[in-house]
Amino acid sequence: MATTSVRRRQPASLELLGEGVLDMGGLDDKLGFRLRFAERRIFREIGDSFQAYGVSPLLYSILTLLSVNPGCRQAELGAALGVHQPNLVEKIDTLVSRGLALRTPDPDDRRANTLRLTDAGVEFLAELDRIDDEVIGRIIERVGQEDYATLIELLRKLA
Image 1 (cartoon, rainbow, N blue to C red):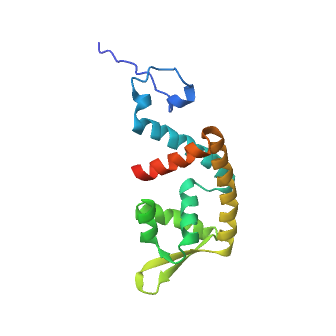
Image 2 (image 1 turned 45 degrees about the vertical axis):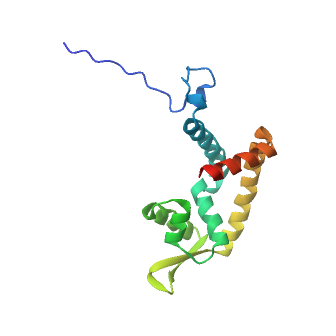
Image 3 (image 1 turned 90 degrees about the horizontal axis):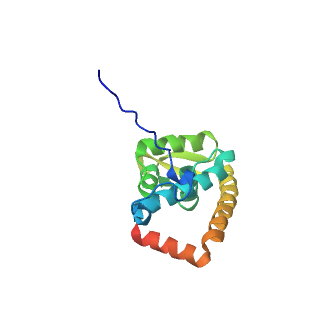
């Protein structure tokens, strides 16, 4: 008779269980591990704040780039964000269908499209910027202004 072992299911995030649940075996001091958990927490805070507006951190990033780069091409936007075209097209479709962005044929290349925010998109982004400022304010309360600035500079160097 064959025996099967029952695998204990790991929680989706050890972070949810709090400190000291498991011996982390040095993982706690590993850059990749710490970055992953920090990213998840920050994205969760931003995501929770944007949820009522139906916006993800990626949509917010797209809106922000369109605001300062009106008329950019989809390919340029994808390259700037590190997002593959199929994933980007879906997000742009969402913004266009919500009346926040316009997609128009590029006059210099009929195969390409250019993008820009609508007036409604500009207003919507202003509200999202206010919310993002609140989230960043809460983060700065936790780590301090100087450490926040240092963290941003270190992340730029790593990237």
